[in-house]
Image (cartoon, rainbow over the protein chains, first blue to last red):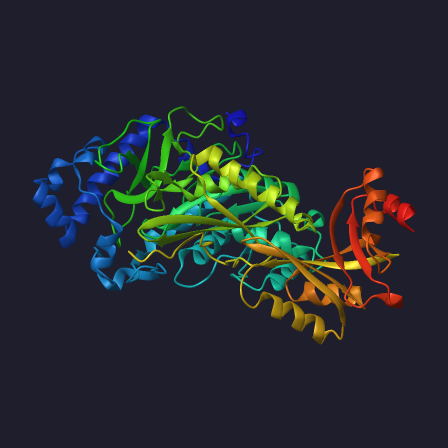
Length: 442
Length: 128
């Protein structure tokens, strides 16, 4: 069996055992957990009223196959019940609170019992193990610490694994690079856009990324492309891995890539994934693209039934070469709510990104500006190009602009204005890069 | 003679030129000639200054992208047809002038044109 665990180098960690559960055994476990979860969730007024409306009783849920009988939970449900409306246990059992930044209106609050914390940290640890990170690695966590789940989640999981954790938190790039070099960081966890920013800044601070012992990158909290992976892997010695998670479900660690770097295994024993049609809510078979829906099979403080993530992906219908039985989802490229419609065409920011990355001269720093002129929506893509492209020639810049425009046209089939902007003009973020600026007054 | 010209990428919006001029002024650099080629979204500012290296450094530290480009300064006689004579020479040699502008304060009181060529060496040997 050792050859199946090819990314474990013979160092099999007990926490990874669940990754390889035979499917029937996994189904039994999922069924048991779902039955318990629904009993608990039924104590929460919102879930109870939704289930009553649909005529579903907890006793109707006998196995994981019955999950589609359950109501969905939306992000708005978490907002509407702010702060503690979805908690299923007494506050004396809650040992941790986190909250989302809440860009639109009220934030959402999530709670954890001691057991929830263990499950969460263990999930993060299982991700790290898939990447090949081990006890003895120096893990620099540059996600923001605080109410955001990124920093504390990676911190807890790395510590549980036995890494030497460096809680650098976000920001102050010069200091991050100094720590990375002086402390001998071997693994880093941050948003992909922030790591790209570090690569760009490293030269300025005299740090040669290629000479650092840094070997692993754990990137999540925002969608990122294969092109960004290539850029990061080319300019440093890391292998860049995707980690998936969301606060509403646990935080980072819901799933991650294995050494195959071909889709993210979802830890199905704790987080049950479904793919549904975003419009009708109908469950789609494995392999078909739709919206990812997750049920927290093992959460007690705040059981969540069928959470609509708005992330668009599909479940990969074949087993992974690494031998894990946990099903994989394709990397999240787009969200059902990020999409904008321009002249009747659906456009996803990720499509723009792919188009930009096909043009060698473009950097990964871009943003999309939506405006409305006389009831007509317009899009402008602002992009920074490689420094040597800021040439002395208007003609050369114009040619480049047209080349970028053509690349976008190739993918989305509409003409989108491109504006080449000054280097370092676009804001870099420590958290999620804000790619779409919507200035439309609707 | 060859001159070092400063080329700066500017976004075509209000206040950009002022920022550039302030950075140059604060560095104690004197502008000899300044010209802008503009498009809808951006422009390229080209300038001849007394201390190009200092100006480039000041602009870079101010967040602008500045380059030093070698251009040719060509003296032109102050009489009808003088520029034409020069252009005849470059045309005959197959040289294209990428862009051209007049130096504001000519040396030796003769007008001086600043010209940009892809092959500056060839142009120099031809015109001087």
